[in-house]
Image (cartoon, rainbow, N blue to C red; front, side, top):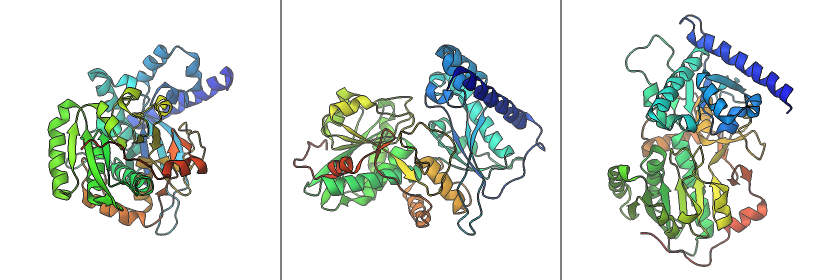
Length: 409
């Protein structure tokens, strides 16, 4: 894309952002009517390259200037989400992809966090004005809103108040599915494996641990859990160990605050709200498989050179058309983030009320599984850094291991 075309597209995006801002800032009556089943997915840029997608001319400007300019921009409509239908009668549902224009670079201090939270509130206001009945939260937005709880007003409200979901239930369930498939194929002759969860004190991490503990074992292979998080969250980790003991005392669980302990495990899950890669080559050993759900990513391609396999957490939504480039290498529009897939699933199945809100417990996983029976969301093939693995790569990944790695528990 040349500078002239980029400038035209950027001008159009800025003009649309101004219209959206007038829509949000206008009086209460200046709004669309509630649209039955309409939904929105709320996101933010993962890095500066995501800012260039709606504003391509910005890549010709100094990055520091761009990061300063976008602080002034209101939430925007990135695209219309199409292809989703109500399960009961096949009626098409209106969907929107909405974004604030602040990335992790803006959220590294108290002032930046306050601005991001203000913009998120405006983003929800934009969804309200569009008549949306449900919003899903992507990337770091759940952690900035107390897992969505800050977006649920107390008492009555003069505005339409959309139902909220963080997507954490489907995300944790999908992580469990990936690990189940990996372990049943790779470790069928191994007595026990250890799975580390980096970010275990968080909403997704703690639910993932509970789902894995409830599975008890994978065929003949037993399970041990290593819960890793910051030192400040050690008390939360100890509470999680107690909860896991009540769910299944036969699954040993221990805690750690040292990423170097990943050298002792067979599999790792990364689900932190860190603004970038936290797992480095010095933390891992060859042969480790990491299931990375984080956005922005907790892993980087340099891990692959160390003999580590990184698996993305994704879903397949039949018919989905986001009409926006998320930067995936593969261009299958039906492959998407699990948090978006959960939003779509709830909309298509006409679920009433909030779903993954705050810290999620296992009964909600059972409800999710009933909703998944509809086929509105399916398992995605194995991807790594947004590239689908070839048939040969999948075969090598799932091949039985000859030796058991050392365990941490």
